[in-house]
Image 1: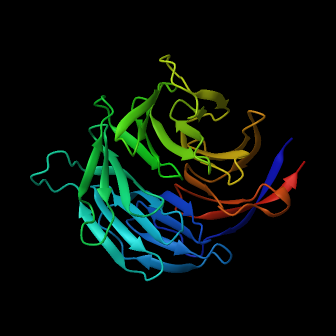
Image 2 (image 1 turned 45 degrees about the vertical axis):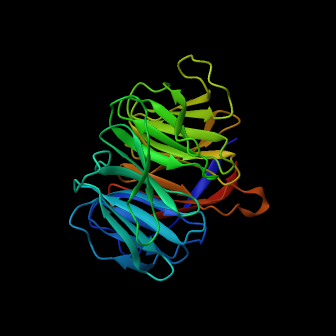
Length: 323
C-alpha cells in the first residue's frame, strides 16, 4: 500500500529563519518556534497567525504543549524557558536556567517537555540527566527532582509520555533513557542507535516510543517489554530509507502511522505494522519538525499533518487516500 499526502497550504507569514519546533495541538491550533526567536500560533485552516510572542534575542530550540492544548512551553538557545497561556495570551512563567544559584543541580536547559496535566515540566541539557521543574504560577522553574541517567552525555531531547508516567530522554551518542516519574528512577536504557537521537515521539496510549537519529534510521520501541539487559532491549522495528539525518518524528493519533522529517529534505510516512514507508514528500529544505493533527481522521483515514523546517515556512498536508 502507498499513501498520498497533498500540500494543502503554506503559512501566511513565514518565519525569517528555520522553524525548529512545530506542534498541532488538541485545541486544533498549530504552534511554531523558530531560530528567529519568535513563536507563533496559527489557524490551521487559513494559515493565518492568530497570536504571537515578541521575538526573543536568541533562537527557540524546543517546544511542547499540554494535553489540552491550552499551554505551550518553549525554550531558547541559551536556556530561557517560558510558559505561554494560549487562551489568555499571557506568559505565566519564565525561568532563566542559565543563571547559577545555590542549587548546583540545575543546568541550562536545551530540550523541554510539559507534563500532560501542565503541572510540571522536564528539561535536559549538558549533564545528560533530566530535571523535573514546577510549572505552577509563583514557583515556575523550581526544581522538583533530578532523574539521573548515569551517563555524562549531552541530552538532546526529552518527552513526557501522554499518561504522564514516564519521561524519555535521548543523548548525543544515541542512548535513550526511560524514567519512571513516580519513583524518580531509571526504568530502561536503549542502545539501539549509533549516533545522536534528535527526536522522540510517543504513541497516544504511551506503549510505543519512536526515535529519530543522525544514523538515518527510526527505531520503534515497545516500552511494555521487560528489559533483558541486552543492548537494544525493547526495539521492535527499524525503519530505514532516509539518505541523511532524521531530525523529527511523530506517531499518528490511531498509532498506525509515523512521520519522519529529514535533513535530506523529505518527509516520509511509515506504516508501523508493515514496517515500511508508504509515502514520501519532498520539501525545499531540511525538515526540523513534523506533527500529526491529534484528532483522528474521519472514515479511518490517514489524517493531516504540519511541517516546519529550514525555510521558515509552516506547511499543512492532508491525506488524499490510499493507492
